[in-house]
Image (tube, rainbow, N blue to C red; front, side):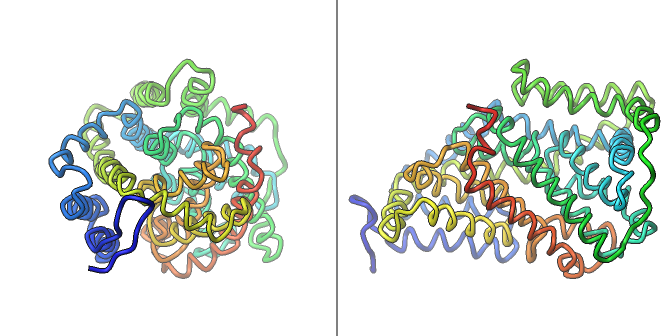
Length: 435
């Protein structure tokens, strides 16, 4: 059997190669990520005997038994409740009153509305679907081509995993052993920069192609009225982020309070009833049922790869080619962006995070900086074919062909890549609030 030596102790055999290839092939065939990983991890442990196969079940349960993971279903439920209570419409009204005076007023307001929604849900797909349903027809009426309007919403919704609270930051924090609360603080500037880059790109495209010229004069009175009307909706992100940043809540506790607050507001405003609760729970459970098994199975995979010394092998081979910090960071950045084009953020995090994290540490990259760069770069993949999740979601909402939406999303992708490069080489933007 052909092999080469990995590090000092482990041989690279087909017992390692075939399970890793199997994971990729099974995902390519459309098998759910957690099933593909489960088969691959089981085969890897069986053929290499690097860890006892009997420990797989125990490791899975230990991986799921994490307090931080409770935040994932709770934030998903909060986002769903936000839509069902009608509070998401209030956030959009506040966004329009804030940014509607610009020439590209409603387009800019739509992106800002995506940002507001991201401050609560932590999910790209949820923001894309809900904001898309509320804004697409009006964007078209304002003068935007339908495919461009779809691309605008899909791009704005990318902030779902980039602006805290973010499911992606919860996952990467758990997988790499980094504080989620610290990541939330560090992500404020990077997430805001992505949001602003999308807004500015829309302004540029609007001026170049004259899509919309319907901006109203800014009215302070109208803005105050919108703030007052949306006071309950604005309270929720204030509770989430204010509680986390002040140290009053952990992210999980903040998610719990957010769920209770959102439901309480819905009952107070009589926009939901007890009969809506099961529907929200079922809807949120479906999303959660995809994310958590993937995270759980990533932990034994990471342990097996570590026991096989594969991360150290990658470090040795990369440093043998170049020891330049700038080049290695660029290579990681390109890899993350390409990986985001073919697979969603959470699977990418659990597969690549444990492997490349030691390399980042070896070259002196700050742990928090690495996490910010990885999540930001992967977030771009939500609007890039072939797997861009937001493209599929918004295509389902609007009926526009996915490739037409992707074509109109190119300017936004370019602007987000520029921000990702800036973040990669200016760590101070990610570390400003944690030093």
